[in-house]
Image (cartoon, rainbow, N blue to C red; front, side, top):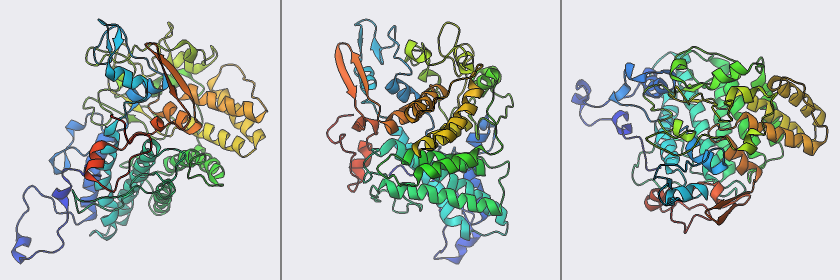
Length: 497
């Protein structure tokens, strides 16, 4: 919470002044924010990062780049889950080929003790100007109510997304009392603010409240090309994911699975899954030659596509899956047990793997460039709906959903089990296949489902138990030093990380 956007003070609106002559002076290195258009410009600085392949060609508001959430944590999560493997032929950062041993950093990755503090910093850094917009745009000067609505709606959608991700990473899944700080206004006492951790229930309630406010705004003002996630389908998809995640957490409510089913159904409206391997390949293609190729498909709601600047997703995306001379982290070879999950009749095997078995979901091997992420895509809605139906005992309806899903992913008809437990296992197996090497998807599934993982590293046995404290990232030490009201997540109190 101390990592407030460093240019926030540059656009705080001064509503009162001691000297009337101030009104005749043009502020230097400062933008006075008073109109709806001003708040649009604040948000536009962020939007340019997510909507422009080469954002350096676009003008900057306030003369500098707006911070964004850290969307990519694949380099960490992939090794945590075992989807990617540390390279052992070179690269002293993680493995010393001369000594034939992992370095301390390499061991920390393999035993789930190498958390990413930047996630916390970047999300809260991003939330300060977002809160400024939401708090002040209702009373900002201007008569264009549609503009007011879609700027506020876009900001609300991003606030909901940000707090959902913070809860997923920093809240221990079964312990409701350990949520994250929720602030809804721009912090004015910078450097002295000491927010407390709220319950997970309070956090999810705020996320869903923001989502419902966006849906209400959409009944008044439709989304426009300028917007990104101020759109009905994306909000329903996000809410489906929130309810499904919340349904087995310490904040669970009896209606969560029913709500997950409802929201997933709404997100699926008028959309169809592809039956083409080439479409799946194109969706994830990060190659230089494909970087600026127009591509639209029902399979995703938004497609974050990084270009040459790499401010949004950063340059480590490639090294999350393949080694290079700058960061030789992983070897890029799919584990045999993972590859075996993909049948020969599975179009995803053709789309995402090389003939020699190497994973190449993002087409990064020969023509690597940029990154692509698609939060809450259509396939997830099918699988959330199917799981929600099974969890409610509606097996026949879940079978129908899975028959349609598998019909889009396999060239031959698949047998869909009728037994509830076997049907649930099919759904979970399909989640593994569908979201293989997709950023944090598998890691968060493991946390939600209480997966136990065991590793032998240089003769030493490491075990990650269900609900292990390492499934939750620790509050950064700097945050604890500055905020005496902050409480560390149980298990991390005495760990040196």
